[in-house]
Length: 212
Ligand SMILES: O=P(O)(O)OC[C@H]1O[C@H](OP(=O)(O)OP(=O)(O)O)[C@H](O)[C@@H]1O
Ligand SMILES: O=c1cc[nH]c(=O)[nH]1
Ligand SMILES: [Mg+2]
Image 1 (cartoon, rainbow, N blue to C red):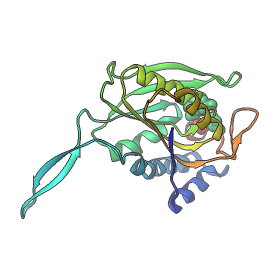
Image 2 (cartoon, helix red, strand yellow):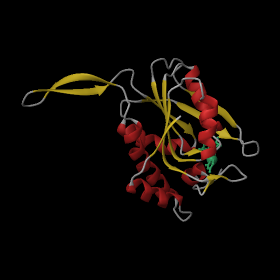
Image 3 (cartoon, rainbow, N blue to C red):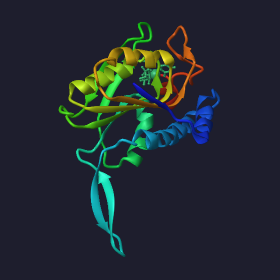
Image 4 (cartoon, helix red, strand yellow):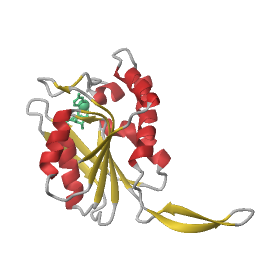
């Protein structure tokens, strides 16, 4: 998997405040939103465009517009919802599909409880958003599902990734020839015995929306 860790002082600053245990939910939401727009700038470098001509008040100018079919943004509920607005602000014509997934905290296996996506994703570029790539079980299952529906190009945006999760993604998709990219704000040290990213930021869903 092609992985980009965005190296930028604004990203590092916002991520540091996001990690802080004393950061409250409203601030956490705002920072997650701001961070995703910074990641999206890098993650959309290969977004498909078509050449067009526009008339400026002075003369015709060559330019580009996003190609159709427009990209599909897929937040993985619940925590991925905290990254949706930041994505659609940069990609206002994108369509949005939803995947509801939860990691069983005993087995660390991902379970899917909701899907609301176009049946046919042929020819679609897809941007999956989820703040945390820990064991990789959730993201791998989500991306496998998108490929089964015909997606031909998938980019994942995460706020934090663990080396174990990246290794798992490489194992699952090795040799499949599937084009997958990961853009993340940081690559952390490891997972702890509970499958949490260290140093991480805790449970992203709980920090965004409260403990359920
Ligand atoms: O890489 P993994 O080991 O699969 O873990 C990562 C997943 O865990 C978190 O979601 P969670 O299951 O806590 O659901 P939530 O968004 O509803 O809180 C996170 O947002 C990812 O989806
Ligand atoms: O550190 C982690 C791992 C999985 N899910 C989270 O929200 N945080
Ligand atoms: Mg959670």
